[in-house]
Length: 526
Image 1 (tube, rainbow, N blue to C red):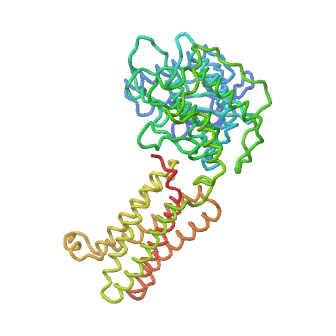
Image 2: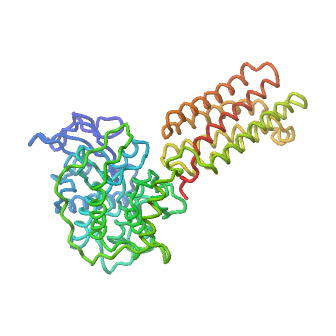
Image 3: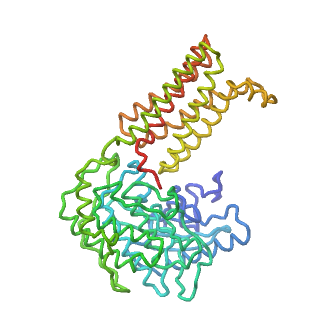
């Protein structure tokens, strides 16, 4: 039986490698290729087999990828740590390279966050994971020469059901060279890659501290730094999640400092602070977490052995000359007792902005309907184009506040559809524009208007995933009204006035639905 009989060119289930490993199913996509769950028939053990991707690689790119793949095999083969997968075998077959390692039955931090709609992780749970990650990264940094992971991010951290953490995917790890000023190759994941990985200096152990800090920030806020603008900007976690201890917030802000010298000196220093925080959190009652997915429990095991320090740990600096740590703790305690935008469904500034938008939309609807009935049908289309412009403004906010790739893409799709529909409405209502666009048939604009509205309404339904139940009902109803009115004004409206009213109602419902999607502008990435 051929090993590569899958239509995608991937390994087919039940195929065999080296007359030993039976492929069971795909297990994921690694940084440099596919990962499969397999059975080692010699010892009857489930393993993970990583296959190096060779798709669309020129000879030079293939050589570099093969070198990095072999480096990963050699590097992992000589390492032994409870938070690293064990390497059993490496080989080449039919022109492809493979790495056989422990099969980890767990989920990545990214998967865990997505399953709870990016709701913040409890600080106690994050600290438990963080101590293990400091331990394994500190172990790597103590190698001779030091190994810099360079790609610490939620998708490269796996957690088992009992809360044990594994660091995976060493595809771009490198050895630290004291005499080297810059990295030879700039690699990393946007949002989690430190500034020095973009060409300012050589990556070092503090590069991994930055990536770990960015990962902590994402887990405690639910805001993916991939979408942060400008780059390398992280705000206080307590702004979004007042339950986070002030000292943990301050530590993470130090870890993601753009200046390498402002970060903690080593993973040992980070681990020391996390252990102190863990001791204080252990004395607090557990915080109930609302989630559809069970959170892996924290095992009752002895504390993880600390990594031997390479430098003396430095105390946490104050946030500023007139703002002490004591003041920070007091401010955080007060903030936890006062309802904020993280605990209230609406804030006063948000209500004012959204009310103004909705009043404007309703006013344009009424005025446009009156003008269409008294002065001419074209005024209704002009009013619709104004509403489309208002909707575009809202969508720019939703694009900025989207913290998942799906919501970000859906907002862009909605914006494109809104622009097309708004342009069509403007062309239908403005005769001078029709003369300029005489090479296009006027019926084309009517054809574009309704699909644009419908697509925009459907795209906004993606935002239901991050809403409360009542908001889901309201947003779903508004999108349904927008779609229904758009279809009725096209196929069933008998008079110009009714046609205009349905068209403008569709836009107003769409604006109201989009307004709900950005109900908390303070949560956007700035």
